Length: 97
Image (cartoon, rainbow, N blue to C red; front, side):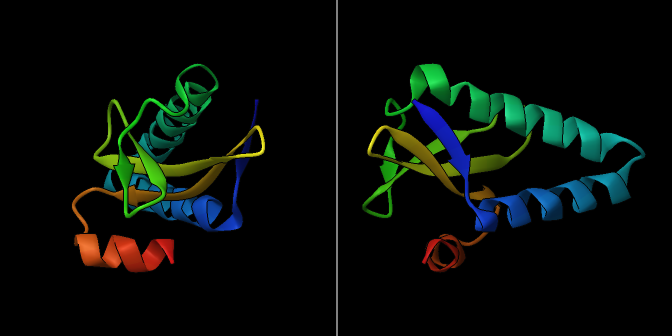
């Protein structure tokens, strides 16, 4: 299986990087390293996560309060969003479109 990170999720990762890097020097890099490691784990564990908003699996990050929303289609793992779990669920639903 192959992982594809959609543009919307890349934008989310960049926003998370900026947020954490502003909090502490180099913390943004730790954030990205952790989230990419979480995403890579999908090569082994895709599909085992609970389904939210009707069609997205949700992987919770190990170290940061973020969730990776993804779908599995045609042998491909599509990362649609990487969002802060502290967000309002209505906002997350709208963000996922």
